[in-house]
Length: 382
Image (cartoon, rainbow, N blue to C red):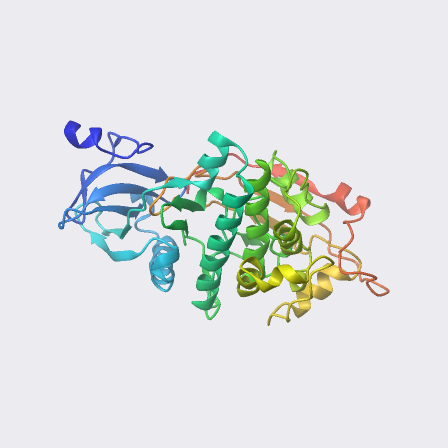
């Protein structure tokens, strides 16, 4: 093993004492990352290829809901074009690791570095690199949305920079647009605070436009070296996403900067689609966007959220909103494997009067924010 360990890519962690040595007959070489629901290992398959093997934690193997979510992840990841993500090579259960059988998924191992690590180590990206990553991630989102999925957890640790371009990974909480199952209870959402769209934070449905908002946050982070809505407790960050405008100081001017700003509109209907981002990033789109970007075509399912977000300003639309735990990554290591559980209690929204005067929603009234009571719970791995 020592000779193998010496040839492992940088950043791969050694196996821990409680880790298995094989999964599904594949020899494990090291850890790529771990999270609340599972661990991702670097392994060698029977063809001698290095692959990423993702398993759920043994303590969750008998939980039907977790197993169902894992099955959804395998199914959803397999729907996406392999050029923009980690290709799924297989899946199964290892009966030797748990009485109920330990589910696992095998994907191609992507050699590269996460965008989070790249920015942390080297600072903001040069404009040329930023533009290339913007095109690559927008293309990946177009393929994901074309497959009928919403990623729902696009963030720097889930974008791997490779020689062939950026890859978007981790479909642990992705949702199929043709499926009613979300594997969450009423009043809960899964995601990472600071990388979620405002309509999702107030209890709305995650649609492709939510991924576009995350794209804008991702590009702003890559271009400035910091989060557009700042750091801090999850509840505070979530409030800023819902109420405040992003801090884009230092973001390069020009067409790319304008696209990033348009993707961060509070109203999902005012954001471009992934195909529109692609078109405008590679040519004609730069000829006529000196002013405000054109309004994109409506996307089905946004109508009732548009009314919520515009009339009377943004309100916390659920009695209890919980920001949940994000999974570890297939094909890359997670930079923030677990997220604090945060409960937000808010009064029922009052009936709005009058008409919205513009496209940018107003802030939540101060008296409503004063009524919000945070309850920060302990970090938990589940």
